[in-house]
Image (cartoon, rainbow, N blue to C red; front, top):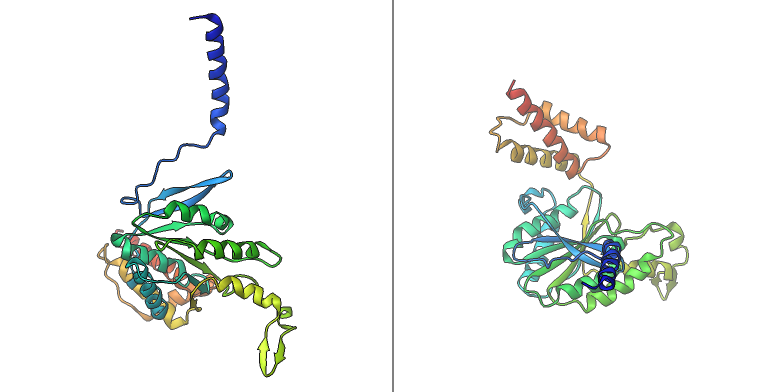
Length: 296
């Protein structure tokens, strides 16, 4: 081989070796027959869908005390899976009350019928047009899931997101739906000063522009579902359910006693909250200790 050509090839190899780490990795196409969920990742100016391993062990029956919310979102999801008109949904309310769990349970319920879940972070919602474009024409039905969609005071991102949602959701193919959870009904903090300039015109209340601007974002969702803090009775019912679920596979014999009830209440007081997440954590704690004692 000519020495000059050999030198050129060596230099080309050296340049490629330096450039290769800077190039985006080749992402294989997702096989949606096998993958039930994915997460959108930002990669430079673009992004990609990364398949996720998901567990389908959470069922709708595990969600205790939120019957109305469960039935409404389940009906909306069935409509969507069957190819019928359905609404984008906003699940808002107290933390740990089953909002994101409800979405995961619906995936388990309808995965066999072609439902798929795609997680997308709030900061990546500007990529919605790219995500929607990648899903158009596929036979599966996709719920885009944004957990904890909210904005702090002073953040102007919600105005940008409002226009993105307008363009992405109104022109989205019929196999794409957006479900979001938030601790706030209007997704942004509401201040007392927002209400200072309400006007009474011919007996009708007219909110000021700041309030209208904030409400307009949540208006992009056709279905609003409210989740409220648990009462003590609700909390204890969820604790009892999860103890039953966790004790059954281990054949643990147990009974609901006043002492166990007091332990659960004390656990919630120590954590400073009384919700489904806290109930599940106590059930794991108590069943684990009981199983440990049984093998001694």
